[in-house]
Amino acid sequence: MNIQNQNPGQYEGKHTADATTVEEGLAIQEEQAKYDDDFATETAMANTLLTPRFYTTDFDELDAIDVTPVRDDWDSLIAQMVADPNKGHFKKNEDWDHVDWDGMEPQLKKEFIDFLISSCTAEFSGCVLYKEMKRRGNNDDITQLFQLMARDEARHAGFINDALREAGLRVNLGFLTQKKKYTYFRPKFIYYATYLSEKIGYARYITIFRHLEANPQHRFHPIFKWFCEWCNDEFSHGEAFALLMKTDPKLTSGHNVLWIKFFLTAVYATMYVRDHQRPAFHAALGVDPDWYAHEVFTKTSKLSEQIFPITLDIDHPRWQRQLEKLQKANVDLAEATQNGQVLRKIGAQARAAAAFVALITIPAKKHQVPAQTRMEPVY
Image 1 (cartoon, rainbow, N blue to C red):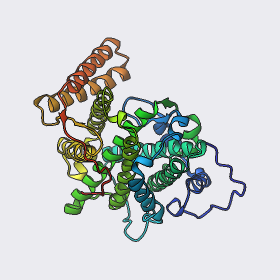
Image 2: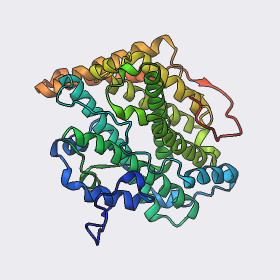
Image 3: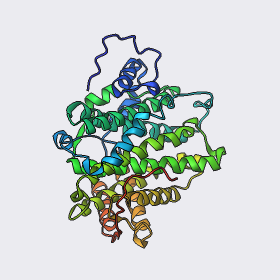
Image 4: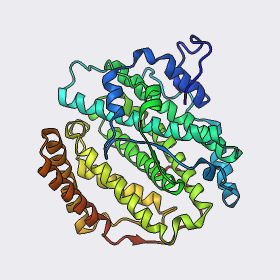
């Protein structure tokens, strides 16, 4: 996905928050590439089980979707996104407090930078996938949706890069597009994974935002002030994927329910393990990672009831215990890998696999999916 900028200076001084298309947003990013930092880009390039991935899929199958069964909800969602309530929002203003990066506690700084780079990579991953669908498709409904979602994700990634620039870092998003490994997922797996990614993103951001509203003394960086509008974009994107799944009832019934359970378990478990890698970050926020995980899982489960016929039993006595085992196995795996301890690495991998199996075999909770899928942000 190369941006051909025929007039190199035309985007100088412009901001991704004001871009009306994904193409304009990415061109502005390219203009700013002179600020890129090798460390940030190399971190974003990493491919592990816990790092955000870039995806590709069968775009012809996506292009063949007929949204007629959900036309009323579809048109309502598209109209909301076309109105673009967040245009111009994702940039610094008078509410952006000074950040003392040099004075920040070293471990907190390390973990917060990791959080920002990971978030930037995840947002840009969505942008790349959505823009490619828009480029390849001929279905006006589908290409319009993906153009709008790509626009939003480009803004988010650009905003995070602005925050990183204050720390002397910046992710080279164009380099990521060309060099990062892409993972192929069938369209239905894209639906499950991306729907959950967007909804859990909403739950994560709104939980932090509401917590810091009530406890502003823990807001150690101004970017958290922008999380409400940010998560509303995530919410809308999740609703779009719910409507896509609603066009084909087979996607949420029969053997596909097993796939839904797998993706729910994988997404929740990955979040839990990743967040426990950032103890100083959560301590600075005044948040216990176990409490935070349960809050996010509860919100995400409630939201996903709108489209999935099952939710995970996160109050089952085996749930928390196995998450903790998975997290401990991941710590041991990382240490064994770093130290070249082959047998210890194999043992940690086996323990992690056993914990995941114990999680996924917890009986799910079943419910009737409501006829009306579209929701508004409720938290």
